[in-house]
Length: 314
Image (tube, rainbow, N blue to C red; front, side, top):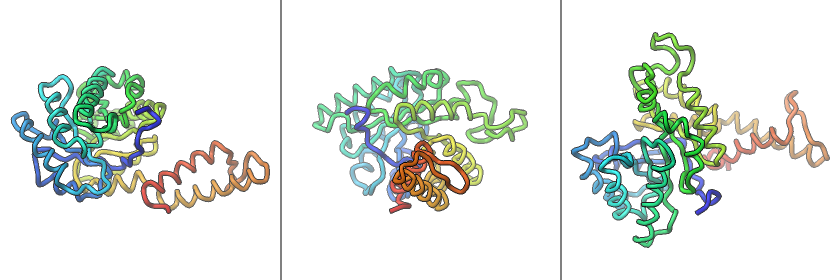
């Protein structure tokens, strides 16, 4: 598989689901999330990690996942669990795994390890080589410093995820919890969004290599307004989706990262005006008093394409 062959998946919402809980896996399978990832890392205690693999395999093989992207977050490459996470889950349910999410990477080396191991497993099991994609979490300062290099390091790589929880620890940022004070409301006196630089770096790196950028978790599940704010900031910068650590966050993400009716209406009008101008041999047109050209049209054609993929435009 080459970079051009990467599948195009919706990632408006990526729902985190503890891999040891059959009940929560069943609930996630019927959710409206675009992608569900069954977690073997932070959501599972060390004593439960080995047993959780079998629970995940059963869930992947026995439940109806509809059109959802099915993902598994393994433990970090340097841990004692990662190798067995991959071998046991892919051996048991490889035909029903679309994406592997790799946490706490620091550079391309960890991506290459997972890529090579997946290739060996696919070959051994008679699966299509290269079908299983990879998403990685950018949650260490070393990874953020090398994010552009990471973004282009593997044809399996489909998305970068900004993980602000571990990143705040890695960078020494003084906040109490994930998403708790991104706008300076913590009283520490920092103006604006403390994650703007990291978000922008991850999104630019992802876009420049033709892959997706996904915003990470927001811990305050009792504040949908704050979750919407963070999602809107990420969407404005070019991210395609956001993690949901609770099912209640899924509809917010699906709404924020899909074009609104007003955006679709504007996009249709701009593209139509540009097509009319081109038919008349003109390189630019006027729309509501603004000059539009091919570059403008390209932006709005992207809006329409995304609207079709999200099912909000025929």
